[in-house]
Image (cartoon, rainbow, N blue to C red; front, top):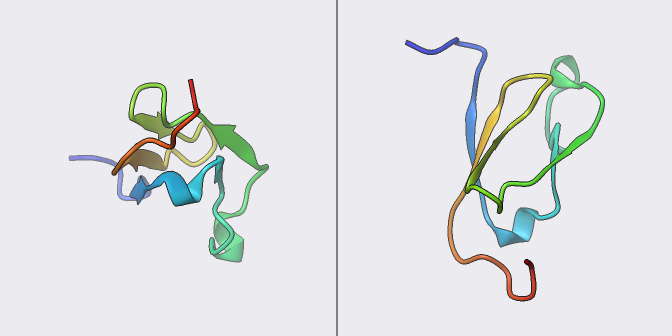
Length: 64
């Protein structure tokens, strides 16, 4: 079983560039903003809060 504090969030091209915490995060979940490369492997995990972001949908055109 995973840690109850860990979350998995599905993101799309609309959410890029991806950073954590997200703008709608509650005050208690705030930490320094960190940008995450979710396109490289399809997932990225925040080093501060362990939220796992999973990319869904079509990758944006022009990104390498």
